[in-house]
Length: 216
Image 1 (cartoon, rainbow, N blue to C red):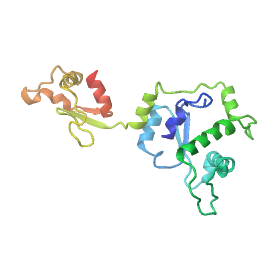
Image 2: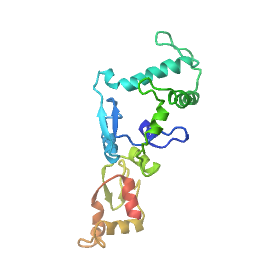
Image 3: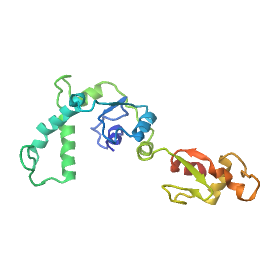
Image 4: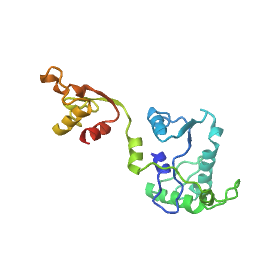
């Protein structure tokens, strides 16, 4: 996801721009209007703001950047054809285009003085003394983007995930620890079949959270 790449540190030392934004301003694409992103933004303490549908000028900054890309990069690449002409044969691979785009951003766009600020974006970023706010680890960031918190039941035969029983079933030792976690030595209620009754407890979280608790 592009937001993950924007937030985390880049592998190249000259690409220093990173961090969790105070506000994530976007359009109404389905990826950005989901409950998942709302939860991610809450966990990251990041405000969500949406542009007005059908009002391109509400996204003026990014639209202007696309125009800059078209005028300063795309039109100079092999295989480029204007919108008024039929498309030419593809002459660049995706990896080759990514390399050209990265070179343009780092060597030209970030180093070229901005017409409003009079400073190159890279120099302006580094001179502001800004300390980016980052997640504790990349793994934590990945978990936020790749998992969606849902209510699930821990059953006597394990965890049912996407309708599949035993898909993430814990071991017998984990079940015993899980019984204690649920709030009782064995959770007996009349003995026999009621010994693991506490595994009907409703837990809010992803299956990975549940397994981590049971195995700790």
